[in-house]
Length: 245
Image (tube, rainbow, N blue to C red; front, top):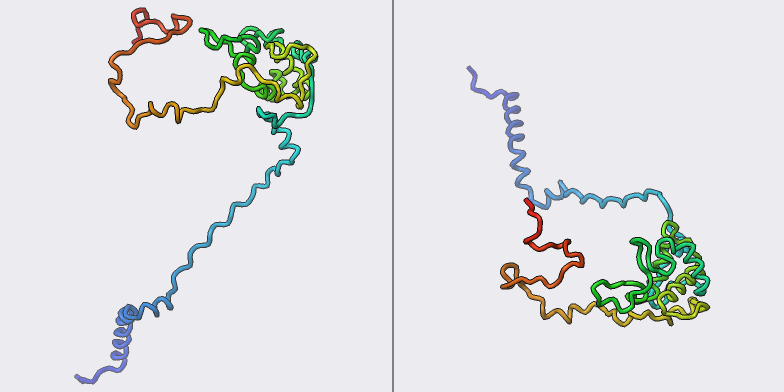
């Protein structure tokens, strides 16, 4: 048998050796060359903003004005207009008295609008426009946006001033049936209880009572009842209360 090497077999073995060494050679390439050969993937582009739905349009100034009907205590928001107590009486009897009574006394369980002077410290205070409310703008604003019940925002500015003037008359804030309320003299009218309202001052007046770690158990040696409901059977004593399983 001949000891000479077969040229074809030698060529095949050499090719296999080169292919086997290729990964090792690739691993020994400098990092810079590898980076050049395989650049990092680019960051994904930011998503495009969502397309508009194409619904509606921007509100027109006159449309915004129709909704922007709030009236502030300083008179901002008042529409031009005027109305007398006499005119307000007619409007009130036709559109308001069925719920609030002819003289603001309230029918059934509908709100009382007049009276109650000096009753706020009593057992049963009457919180009416004259006895409790601080600002006349609250009257005008509420009537303007919510009354008459079931037909809100149907009154004209002149009718609103007239009804508000009549409510002042019912509460003895104005005495003359010919008194005319308007956007010009509106802020000059002061309600009787205005001075009893003040800004929330609990951060200063009550801060001494605030504790970082409030007591949650056994905080008082004894608990006493300091007030009761007007109708006593609403909160009965434990001795007479029905047993609850």
